[in-house]
Amino acid sequence: MVKQTILKDKYKNEAGLNEEERAYLKRGRAMFAQNADWLEFESFAFGMRSPVFSKTRTHRKILENPLYLALRDMWLQLGVQQGRIAAPEKGAAKNAPRGKARRRR
Image 1: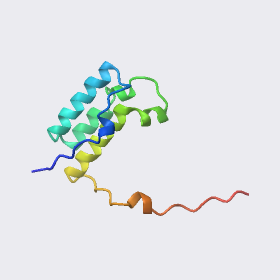
Image 2 (image 1 turned 180 degrees about the vertical axis):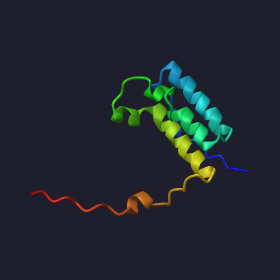
Image 3 (image 1 turned 135 degrees about the horizontal axis):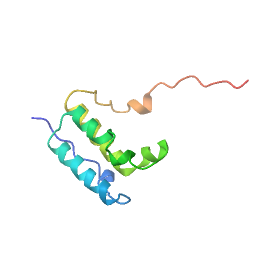
Image 4 (image 1 turned 120 degrees about the horizontal axis):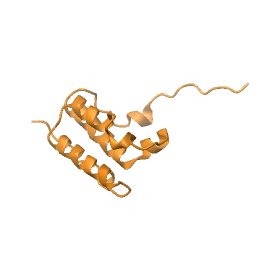
């Protein structure tokens, strides 16, 4: 049986979400709890009907949107649980090689 990872507390906070976004998040949580297919969840979370993209927003505002963050976290967890993507290694981001710095002329 696939072990469900508990969502991070910071994504349980629905402050700042409107009614439509709260309802969408609730549907996303239900799909996550049912271990929905990763690609099906991706289509639900980030498709054209997702309220994440329903308002005109800048790229930065989308990336900071609590609904987007929660859906992205669930999507990534499902991908790892279903073997579709590799789990991040501990400290991988911290120890990742960086590109060479550009020199100014």
